[in-house]
Image 1 (cartoon, rainbow, N blue to C red):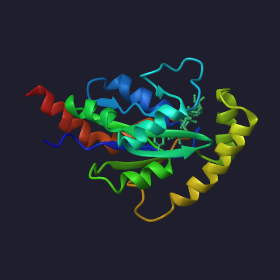
Image 2 (cartoon, helix red, strand yellow; image 1 turned 90 degrees about the vertical axis):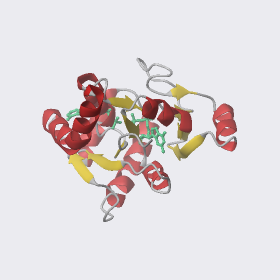
Image 3 (cartoon, protein in one colour; image 1 turned 90 degrees about the horizontal axis):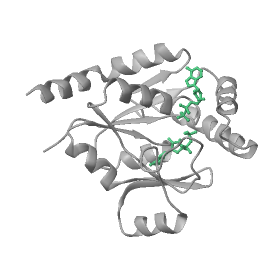
Image 4 (spheres, protein in one colour; image 1 turned 30 degrees about the vertical axis):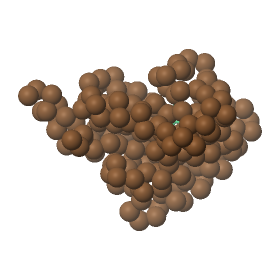
Length: 198
Ligand SMILES: Nc1nc2c(ncn2[C@@H]2O[C@H](COP(=O)(O)OP(=O)(O)O)[C@@H](O)[C@H]2O)c(=O)[nH]1
Ligand SMILES: Nc1ncnc2c1ncn2[C@@H]1O[C@H](COP(=O)(O)OP(=O)(O)O)[C@@H](O)[C@H]1O
């Protein structure tokens, strides 16, 4: 049986995707399930293995890719990231809306699958604000910040391609961005809530 329609959140690193997803998962714990990706990057302070990511070494990840365990994978800023088939299946089994946090390569790969998600792009109000947020987060080295800013400029250009995203949400004021996100997802949220009452 087809589950509810998944939701892909994309957009530059530092735009606020994780912040918005965490809020959504807090407010609608039984409606959404976060697709826990695999990555070869090191965990940040406070990140939990199996919750934020499955943190693996490159060798293990490459083995999984060869064994066809991933729906999609990409190299971002010197590390591998990927969505395993299992990560998505677990959420579908719970009849929850699967949320995926993907870079632009992941968006393109997902478009070649049968998942048919809703594609949302989260934008910062400006590149300057993005840089400020990345620095303020205190998780990245200077080299990593520069790589992320370069990727962000490319991302913001690509997201202008007609039809690539169903909606673009500018995360300037966090409450406003969150309300817009809930608005875009309201139909799917209502469907899942109604199905859980039966
Ligand atoms: N293609 C793909 N991209 C991912 C996946 N998981 C995370 N990403 C993207 O990888 C990039 C870097 O993520 P991360 O290192 O957590 O940094 P952050 O986005 O700044 O918090 C972001 O653009 C994410 O959207 C995945 O499973 N597949
Ligand atoms: N609307 C906002 N205004 C100011 N700071 C924000 C806003 N949204 C998120 N942030 C902060 O910006 C940083 C990057 O957000 P994060 O959710 O980690 O982005 P992403 O997951 O897209 O990389 C975090 O420190 C977060 O607290």
